[in-house]
Image (cartoon, rainbow, N blue to C red; front, side):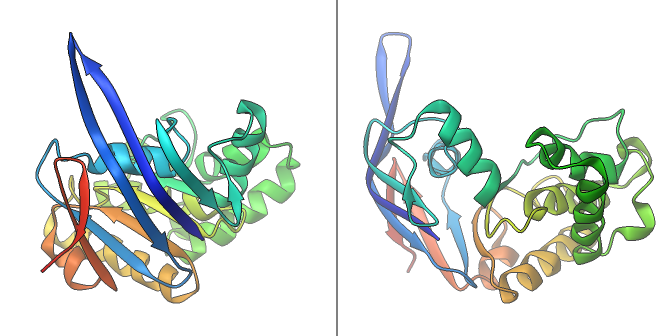
Length: 222
């Protein structure tokens, strides 16, 4: 579902060039949970944004669902990303004036899906994360764990099969973190490919594979 081949990404901090990702190769298959761990500043989040097409690589190849996205036009990249990739942000990134169901349906409607079908898809996704009873509630009325589950529903709505999650349990207490992790594992067992950037060892303990990143270099964890 996701293939990175020799991917690199650099940026400038003042006059200094920072090589955030260095010649990284990674394959994420359907039905697997891959955890990427490492200290802050090691390049984990940059790796995830490059994998999701949110920022370009400087070199190497990025393929999602069999299509190289590093060479796509901005319009085609946008379409391919919205069809195949669900991105989960640490801060939830929900629209506060929309209900849970409206948040989940919004990306589909922006893709031209009629409102009724988008709502139906949103409800299926909310059901997958045990949030149907909260469908008509606004984010401010939900707990942190519930908001993260809505964010997960938004990531899979429309049958997206690749989830990229940046510290999905980092802002949650232990109980809510476990609930979100349970949902992730259930989605993976249903055939979704998931790559999670995390500091949480409980996430790593339930992952199929744990990778460690240091100074932009990805390696198998010991």
